[in-house]
Image (tube, rainbow, N blue to C red; front, side):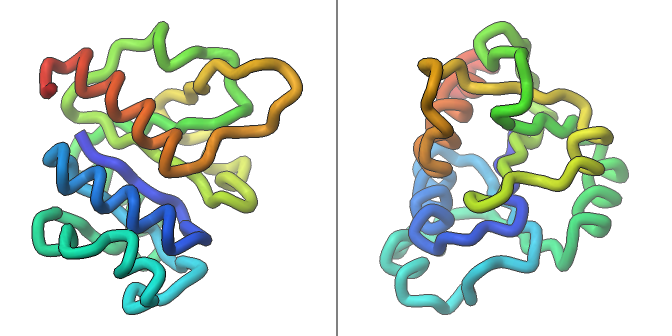
Length: 150
């Protein structure tokens, strides 16, 4: 099980997600370009000293990431507000990569078309979305529970 962030914009969110991954033993993939530099003090402040405790991989762009996932037989699970399928009605497995889009724009339509599954977090009508790091925590918690990793 892995977390992938597609071109993340906000260093504090990425730092929080790295910390979450470190604490739960889940690797993180960053698909560049990012909206910040990894040496950004806001990213490092959020990630704190957890960078020493996490396995992470930076991918130079979507195509390199996508090729790597296929070569390694990962299943891509896109979390999106543009799906009717609830994450709670889905069976996760250990070869899943939980893919999250940019805070400002999600992922492009061509990515929606090629992922293995598209899921959503059920939300109250009339609200736009949940914060990225909170969304990752919700989805990761459910997927780890289902796969008996927690």
